[in-house]
Length: 425
Image (cartoon, rainbow, N blue to C red):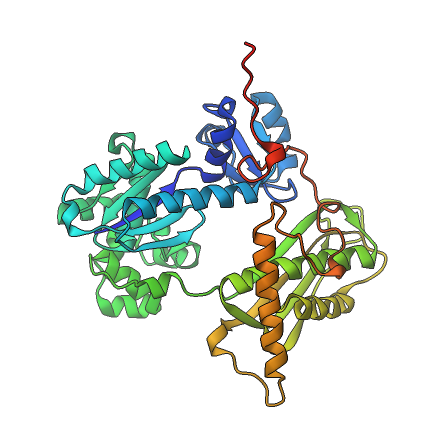
C-alpha cells in the first residue's frame, strides 16, 4: 500500500507552531512581495477568500474581520518541511519515502503493518507531536488513489486524519464523489475537455475504455486512468522527473524606472534559479527574461516584453546565467516606463549526466565552475541568509526592492528570532 502524507494548510500551520495566538483565527500568508494570497487558513477560506486574490482587493475585508496577514516566510517553511520529512523517515526507516513537494510525500507501507488505518493515524499523531504540523494521510494501492484518499482525510473529520481505500466498494464510492478536475494529473488542462464529453467525475473517467482514453488524453492520462482502476504504474521516476522550467520573479515594492536597479533584480533571479537548477542536478541551455509595468495604474504608460537567449553550452553556473540574463534585459528594457514586476525563466533543462556540449567547449573550465558553484551552495546552505556568498552584480540582494511589511521571522534557524518565554506573569 502507498500512503500520501499531506500537510494541512502548510504555510499557515508553520506560523501557528510558533504563534499559538493565530490558532482558530483567520490567517492569510502573502506572496514574496505581499502581493497576493498564497495560503489561507480554513477560517479565511470560510470568509470567501481564495488563493491568488490580490491583497489590496481584500484588505478592507481583512481589517473588518480581524484576519491575520503574514508575509511569506519560505526559509521557515523549508526548515519545517525538513522536520516533517525526517519524522516520516524515522517512522519507516526501511521503507521508501518520496518527497513530492514541500508539504507532500509518498510512503511505501510494508505489508507487515496490517492495520493501515491505525498506522495512518499513528503517523498523523506522531508528526503533530514531533513538529507541531497537522497532516492528513491517504492510503491505497496506487499513488493517484492515495491522493484522492488524502483529500477525504483532510475534508472529513470522521476519518481522524487518515482515509484508506482498500476495497472495490470504497474505490468506486470515492471516485463517484471526486470531481474529475480534482484528480491528480488531470487538473485545469484536461478537466474542461472531459466535462465537455460528459465526464464530470473520476468514476466516469475510470469506466472509459482504453481506446476512449487514447482518443481523449496522452500517455500521462492513460497512466492516471490505469491508476484510478487500481493498477500501480506511476513510479518514482515519473514523480521525481526534473522540472521543464525554473522561474524566479518578483513584484517590486515600488516601481522601477532605472536600468541598473532592474539589472540587479534580474541578477538575483539568476542566482535563485541557478541554485534551484543545481539542486535538481540539471543544466539549462536557454533562458527568458520578462518585464512589465503595473496594470493597475491605468493612467500610466503600459508595457510588457520578453526576450530569450541561448546559453551556448548548457550550464548551471550562476555567473553565466546572470550574464545572459543581463543581455536579454537590455533587449526588452525601454526608458519612460515604470516597471512593477520582472522575472527570469530557465528553459531547455536536462539532467546533468545528459548534457551535450559543443565541439570546442572547455570541459575542464566547465567542471571547475560546476565545483565552485557546489561549494558556494554548501556555504550558503549553512548560513541563515542563504546568500552569504553571491555574485557582485546581484548587489545587496532583493531586500531593498521587495516588501515584507507583515513581519516574517525565522524562528527555527535565526538566533535573533528565537522565542522568548516570559515567566513574570
